[in-house]
Length: 299
Picture 1 (cartoon, one colour):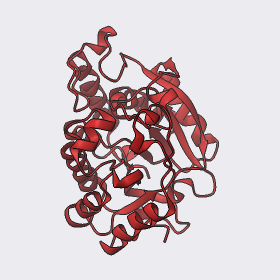
Picture 2 (cartoon, one colour):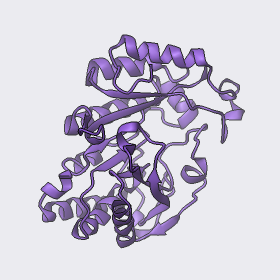
Picture 3 (tube, rainbow, N blue to C red):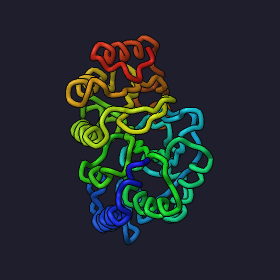
Picture 4 (cartoon, rainbow, N blue to C red):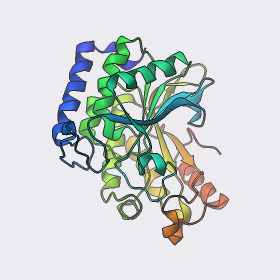
């Protein structure tokens, strides 16, 4: 049973109300813009009172434990609280592709994906829409939603906001993009990224622990971390791996990703203007393997 269905409905409703109230002077994410999103003002994420959704669909390109045989029910949220110059979904995250939806409509999307047979409901880039997701979940639960929820974020998440999700989300899948703030500032406009990301991942792990799968290998609860290898070692994989192995758990499921290719504004940065090499990827995998982080590795 999904965690939120073990929580009293009134508690879930109170969490949603508390999150929505915080939009009046928004501090949902670490940016802490302080704008009144309830009145339609937009902060760094370019988002106001209502959620914006680009698409929702069964997705078979996610991590294997999420996809299973019937797909992960992804809901792609519009906007982002990062400005990654190499974002491969920049039309959604940076250019605002998507439409505004009510809480009821968002709840209906969840039910539609459940009825389509998906293994989970996977919110992609949910950080700036946590209140709206909780608001919709109250209705979705009343409609019969029972699938685990996946929090699929860029890793730039507020611990205080994550605490509102304790006992609600079963699966966390954050990025650990960088091992140094210099790279995070230059390529994602987040000068405090590593401190924030590490605190967020610690909190996620506290809530759900290492990844657990059922007899079919499908994720039911736990933490998965994604790390995209960048050219020239710019992501500082060694520090990301050290943190996960030593400060979180050597049982952390880590997907070291090889799909980097230059897009969006990456061509403005010579060091990012090419795909990674096989050697660069192999070196990143070897670093993770040497640290004992073998769960999720494609060796």
